[in-house]
Amino acid sequence: MSSPEPKINTYASFRDDVLPRIKRLGYNAVQIMAIQEHSYYASFGYHVTNFFAPSSRFGTPDELKSLIDRAHELGLLVLMDIVHSHASNNVLDGLNQFDGTDSHYFHPGPRGHHWMWDSRLFNYGSWEVLRFLLSNARWWLEEYKFDGFRFDGVTSMMYIHHGLAVGFTGNYNEYFGYATDVDAVVYLMLVNEMIHGLYPEAVTIGEDVSGMPTFCIPIRDGGIGFDYRLHMAIPDKWIEIMKLNDEDWKMGEIVSTLTNRRWLEKCVAYAESHDQALVGDKTIAFWLMDKDMYDFMALDRPSTPRIDRGIALHKMIRLVTMGLGGEGYLNFMGNEFGHPEWIDFPRGVQHLPNGKVIPGNNNSYDKCRRMFDLGDADYLRYRGMQEFDQAMQHLEDKYGFMTSDQYISRMDEGDKMIVFERGDLVFVFNFHWTNSYFDYRVGCLKPGKYKVVLDSDDKLFGGFNRIDHTAEYFSTDGSYDNRPRSFLVYAPSRTVVVYALSVD
Image (spheres, helix red, strand yellow):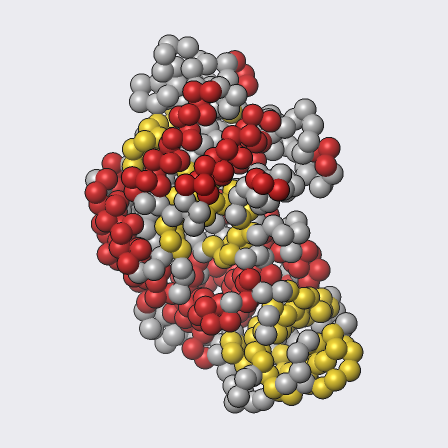
């Protein structure tokens, strides 16, 4: 769905058209979904039928290899979304009933079926299943030169209840009890040990929503061995918050969700993914601006309060997620410029065995594409949102704040302010819908002169230009918000301004 045209895109087109865009925006890695062959297009590639074949609908194996080679030439890591958590139910073209029984690769009976996903579940206690999955992970690294994996559905693997209808509170009994599939946890340890043993530079990311302890601790220290955990609670929280009125947004709730991770656990944060934008839901931009996006995104037409609010908050949501959410930031393609509407895969009418008829969308690809031309058009407001995303990535490239120490000095529910430091940067978020604050004091650790290095209110980003970028801010000694020093700033409504310690 990476083409602006309503069609299934190809490896070659992604290589030539999308990779340069990713590089230009300032990202240093790309995670590619739906590589393993799957018969059902609308499964996002999660119902795998052939684990050792790249999907033929996008092109040839050699074209996939050329895509990865091109990404490496651009300095991009290529991570594969690998599905070892379940397999397609298909018998004719999948592993299901490969030898005529239901237990060749999978658990027999009900335990071998995922009731929600309608798929088969591996028996990780089987020697041959372990050999099959371990060799599969190694094969993709060796044959196609992927730089690592994002393991899908890890929560489903690690628990017999698959994490469904279960609330994890952090109590250790929830992780280390009869509900834990020990064989699956051991497999995850094995595959991480193998990957890092063969390819020390390889990156492994686990999709876990449960908060399993030691998830990102090395095997030698008793952990499961992942490099990063995907911070899955964040996008769901944003959807929940965007349904509220501005005055009901809780600063403490935003911060606690973004920072809710275990000590020494590296996380990849994201504000939006394909899951949040599927039909029945909508993208963050569409949640914020809705139908106004159809008529008021052109610069030659007057804006509306809803558009102004949406563009401002879209930028703030992305940067606070990147600033506090972890050590990595994931962007679902299109979110960098506020892609409108939702995602809907082409589908026909379904006739269920019980006689119920589910209407289709006439096999339309209209909502199954990425309209990159919107972000590139200098006559549309999308352009400013895309420019801001690029500025965010280049700020990280220059200062490396995502791997720096973090200190949150202020969460003010009355002022709707969030202030935190990462490394030499001070981030000042004002989520208030009308109040702008003059001479607002913010705490800091290091003494000296601070300057503006990123301002969401910049005209380039579709803002109102209320911040003077030539101004200098000098710290004064004296404890403030539990920081040894502070300085005064102007914090306009619905803006984020990032200040850096100046070296000149």
